[in-house]
Amino acid sequence: MKPYARIRTQPYGYRVIDTSAYREQIIQEVSQIDHEWILWSGTLSFSHKSAQHSIPIPHIPDTVVCICKNGAPLYWRKTWLLAALTRWDNRLPAAKFLPYDLLPADPSLAMHLDPTLYPPYQKDLEYILPILSATRMRENTTSSKGDLSPEIPPQPVVSILMSIHNMKDTLGWTIRSVLAQSNGNWELLIGDDGSEDDSLEEACAYLDSRIRILSQSRNRGKAIMMNRLLFEAKGRYILELDGDDWLAPDAVALLSDALDQNPDARMATGRYGCWERTQQLGPLWRRNVDSGKLYSSWFTSLNRTTPHGHPLVPRMYRKSSLIAIGGWWNREDRLGRIFEDIDVTARLLNHSLPVQVDAVLYHRVLYGSSTSQRNRSLFEAWCQQTGKS
Image (tube, rainbow, N blue to C red):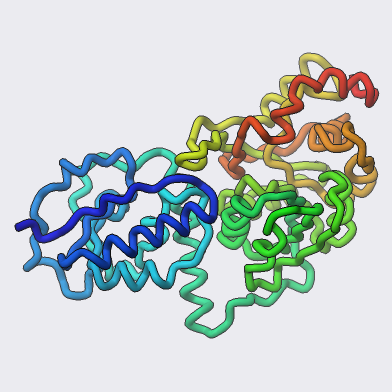
C-alpha cells in the first residue's frame, strides 16, 4: 500500500469564486482520505507518474508538513493541509496557484527533495512566487504582533494610483503585489469608478492604513478618476497601476531610485511581463517587453510627438511634472476613455525620454474584451481627432 493518496480535483478558472470553489473541493476530497500523506502538486506540467515513488517515512521528521521539489509543493501531511485550507482566505491570479500560497513560511516545516531528480516548475511561477512569499511573510509578522495595519508614512515617497471598474476578480491579486513591495514607503489610492460588481467591497477588504479608497456612483472614465486621485496623492512620485495587472516586488524601489538619481527626468519606466488571460487557467506567461526602447526608437528615428498605439509600461511620473501638464485628459466622452495613457505619456515626453530600468517591474495582462484591446483599431482616428498626429 502506498504511503500517500493523490488529489484528483483539478484547478479551473481565475475568478475569486473559482479559487474558493477549488479550495472547498480539495477540503472535501482530503477529508475523505485515510492516508497520512497527500500527493498534491501545484505544478501543472508535473507528471504524477514521476512522483510515484515511496516516501521514506522513517526519515521524515515529525515537524515536516510539506515535501517539495525545486521549491514546488508535492506531498502534504493531511492534518496540516486541512487546517491550512480552512484558514486560507486570500487572493490569487488563478486557482492553480493555491498550493503555492499554502507553503509554510517556516522553512523547518518543509523538506526539499533532490532537485536534480525533477524538472523545474513552469516559467510563470518565477513572477508569482515572490509575491506569495512576501505577503505570507508579512501576514505572519503582523499577526504575531497583533497588528494588521502598518503605520502610513507621514510623507510617502510614492503614490500608487489605481482606477477600477468591475474588477473584483483581479483586484485582490493586484493589491497583494503592492503589499509585497520591498520598499514600503508608498500609499495606494484606489478609485472605484462606478463599479456594478463587488469591486468596492474587494478594495475595502485589506486592513492597511496605507490604502485609501475613493468612489463615485457613476462611471465617468479612467482619466476623470485618475485626476481625482492625483489631487489626493501625497507622494512626490506617481506610479500608475491597473486593477487587472500587478507589480514586481522591486517596482516601487527601482523606479523611485531611478528618478532620485535623474532629477531632470519626468518619468521612469522598465520592462514588463506580457500575459494572456484565459478563462480556464488564468494568466499565461507570454514574453517580456521593453516598451521604453520602443519609445526611444520612435522619438529618435521619426521625431514625432505621438508614438504608436502601444503604451509605455510601467509608468512612474514625477508628480510635479504631471501637474504641470494638467494631468490626464479630463473628458468623459468616448475619446476621453481610450488611449489616455498614451496621451499623457506623449505630452510628458514631448522633448525628453524616460529613465529606463533594466528589469521586469510590471505585469500586464491582455485579454480581448478589455477597453484597450477593443479600441486598438481606433488609434489613428483618435490621433487625428485629438490633434496628436
